Amino acid sequence: MIPVFLPLNLKVTPKSIIWALVVLTSAMVLLTGRPVLAQSISSDRQNIEQLAAAQEQKVIAWRREIHQNPELGNREFHTAKLVAKHLASLGLDVKTGVAHTGVVGVLKGELPGPVIALRADMDALPVTEETDFPFSSKAKTIWMGQEVGAAHVCGHDAHTAILMGVAEILAAKKDRLHGTVKFIFQPAEEGMPPGEEGGAELMVKEGVLNDPRPEAIFGLHVNSRTPLGRAGYRSGPMMASGDDLKITIRGKQTHAALPWLGVDPIVVASQVVLGLQTIESRQVNILLEPSLITIGTIKGGNRANIIPDSVEMSGIIRTFDQGMRKDIHRRIAETAQGIAISAGATAEVKITPQYDVMSNDEKLSEFGGKSLRATLGDGRVFLNPKVTASEDFSAYQKVVPGFFYFLGVVPEGTQPEKVFPNHSPKFWIDERVLKIGVITMTNLALDYLSAK
Image (cartoon, rainbow, N blue to C red; front, side, top):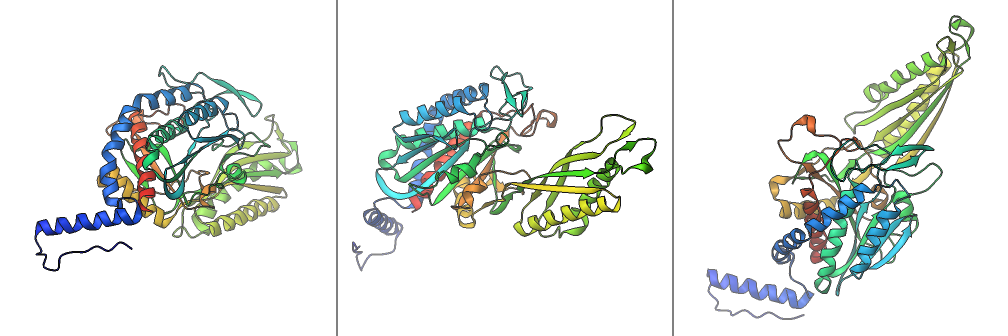
């Protein structure tokens, strides 16, 4: 320990207080090898903004390059090559081919400290884009055996470009960086072709959180429901679990004019759709957590004068509590099968879990909120409502504490008819969000490393 000596006869004056603080701060630097968090934050933020502004056009160019060349899950070859080349140019240790097309870069600071991870997703969606920007996607690809359009209508192109920018800034600060940063560029967040593994779950399975193991992981998502320049987050459950639902109703085929000679699966399916809605409205405690069951497709029959033998339905289930999730699964099977039996039909229910609840760590959320407010200002950071969409960032959070936040992409005052949700073919972002994303994510990393 290094002793700190103060004069016993020191008078308490403004100058003496300042002098004492300087001595104590200097002692902290000598003891820990780094400045205290408050000093680190105040001294670095302006520099980070300058660096982000200097590289802004480069980040925009990356985003547009990725946007014009969208690739679906497990097929992000062009994007992965772009990312890997950039990380290698920064001197990072780079590994490619993780979970098919994932890229991982490791930046080791020259000062001792913890390990953290920063994640971005790279895949696009099988959607035909309906915007008229010079860099709008015209790409075609194959999905589920059919030719479809491909487009970055969820914002993953922005996420990837932002993290590339963060890597460049942190690499430039390597000589003053405490600890290690692992950059995770993940494929297939939106899903992968049938029969394939992928996404965050496969990244974890293939050891992305090992060697070195991060003690915290951070991620962001652009969001058209949040105004530009604002960030939203919440502690605990933030995004819902996601399960796929398939129900097959089997009846007895007959002539449509003689329904009493058969069992009509279309009528049964209609009753099942209505019955499922009573699970949320009448059977589960809605004061505990929200949930929803949505049927998105119903397929059955091929002629107007024939009652078919079977009907297939598919949909999704969203919950925020694991106990409720299991209970709702049971109730869906009981409801569908009970209604079917009452009409002389049968119901086969298949539920396939896809994503777990994405839940932010409590302590990491407290830290993340402070960092965001220090960067954006108190009035621009808010408690985000729970989101019934799903996000496979949850797979990382099951292994290490994680913090995930939303950034707005639409300027305030934009006419509502010109604002389109993520996954819409008309989805667009104000590219000023890219610099904001770089600054907030860089500051999160530096604040965390400086505080340890």
